[in-house]
Structures are given as structure tokens and as C-alpha cells.
Image (cartoon, rainbow over all chains, first blue to last red):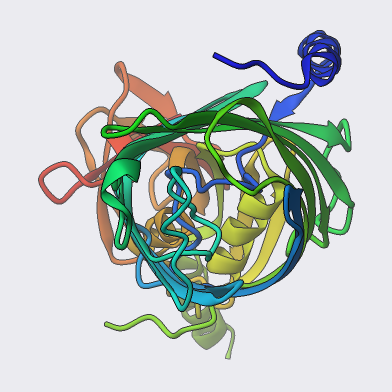
Length: 263
Length: 148
């Protein structure tokens, strides 16, 4: 295993240690993954993002997403990313709530349909550089100070060279906390959330695998609009990906009760 | 004239009692203000709700109504669940027709048939704050149980 960015890992460990000793509230509005929770029923979200992908190559990526929920258990989004479009749907099949805590589980399906084919890459790219099917299970636990979410599921590269392998497992582990405010007084207060997410991949055929980390900071305005800033980089990288560092910014706005309730 | 006014007064005061004045609920499953706002928006759009007062920190919501004649517990519950959360506790402040609450006794309020669930007999001090004790605020065999 090739470990990279050791000093950055130390900084992350230090930040985690400081945060774990603070009085905080958990947050699960993750930047680089989806929690098992579904957006409020009949709401609508629009997101505009920009990311700069670097490594051996440079790519600029503009992405747009519209997300909507049909009910409290079922949501979907349509999006464009780099040279692709995607659809995504998620169904929450388990929910157990208590005061300031919950456990939720959901199933998702995703299809990335790209005009490009990254057949020479031995990793499966989910950033629009190739066409991919992805599904999986998400388990999210929120408890007072900590909100953690695990996702795991198969990914299939739709066009590849035989030696690179086409089927793998994608997984993520996300954590989030509220940094500010210490006390909620109104919906007008700007919220600052910090996230630390790990995103990994292991191919069943072929030897490629990676584990990336994506710290992020999120500002929420008026409890309705978000600005997300994240930087993703590999901790372990046994792939020939040409872009592996991703600096991303996105803005999104949630419209509550956007659709009427059908009786 | 005096004989006419007194019965009218009694009629009006009788119809003004036995009604829910406000509902206070604590939602569960959330710690974020955006989540709280989702519940707030969902409750605010109910056609019989006039005002929702919120304490984000405590996840509590106090609902007052346009008309005390129409209050739907099912729709309040549904609004919180639609926002993606659950109800930890629900309390109602109401004027009760009787002065005593007796275990298992039926009470009519806003078209609902409630039943008391308490040890023995308790005095009611109108307006009385009571809790709905059914799990997840779902009626048991069509009945909501009330407790102090």
C-alpha cells in the first residue's frame, strides 16, 4: 500500500482531536456523499457547483443538480457533471428517531452517462469522465454530538479494457459537526458545519484501489441556502487516475413545500 | 330581556369550552436548523394553523389555530413526519367540559373521542395542559389517550 500525504493526515488527526473535545452538535448535510435521510417531502433543491480537478492532468468541471422528493421516503436528482449527465434515486426503508438522535437506512441507484470513455484508467471514475452504474446501501446515525454515515455498494464501469476490470465496490464514511452557532436562536443565524469524509474504491477484478479523504466546510444561510467548500485528496492511491485532487465549491438552495400534497 | 340574555350567555360559554387552544410538540430525530425549518414550514402550511412558535434548540413547536373548531391531530403528525422526522411528545392546552378527569372516561373535544389514562381521579384546571400518550401519536383502537 502506498501512503501519500502523511503530513496532511497528521493535520487531519489533530483537527479531529480538537473537534472531538468541543461541545458540538452533529450535522449530516454532507458535502461529498448523501445521508440516508431524505429531503423534506415535496421539496426541491437546485445546486450549482464548480470543481478543479488536478493531479497528472487538470480538469475544470461545472456541475448542476436538481433534486426533488416525491414523499418523505423517496427522492431523486438529475444532474450534469463534466461531460456527462446522471440520474440518482434514493429510498429510505428504515427510520428510528429519538430526541436529538436517529438511525436511518436507505437504498440508492445511480447512473452516470458520459460522452467520454476513460477506458485506460484502472479505477472507476464517478466524476463524469466515464459511464458508470452505481448502487448501494446507506446507514446514517445521528446522536447529539456525532453524525456518521456509511455507504457501500457495487459500481460497474460500462466500457473498459479487459485488464482493467470493470466491477468494484465503492464505499464512504462521513462525519459532520456544527461549529457555529453554539446555541440556535433563529433560522436567520448563519450555520457553519465541518465535515470529514472518506471515499474509497476497490475493484473486484484488477488491483486498483484508493482511499480519499474529503474535508469540507459548509455555510448555511437562513436555514435554506448552502455554500459548500471541499478539498478531496488521496490517502491511499493504487490507481493510475490522472486527476485525484479535487477542490470544489457548490451553492444550493432548498425550496420547502415546492409541490402540492396529493390527496 | 334579562331572561333572554342569560340562556344565550350559557349557550356561548358552553360552545367555547371543550376545545383545543394550542398544541405543543417536541420533534425528534434532528439537530440541524435546516431540519427544524423543514418542520416549521411543513406545520405552517396546514390550513387550520395560524401561528407556529419555535424553539430550535429544544426542537419544540407551539401551534395556535385559526378557529378552535378545526384542529387535526393527524395532519399535525403527518406534517412532522413528511418533513422527515418524528414526534417525541405532543401536548394540548384545552378547555375541558368536566372538572374532573377519571381514568378510562371518554372526553369529547374538537370532534375527537379522547380517553383519560391516569391513576384515579384528578382535578382539571381549565385551560388544562394534557399530553397525548399514544406511541408515535397514533390512536389505539381509534382513541387517543390523555394524561396530565
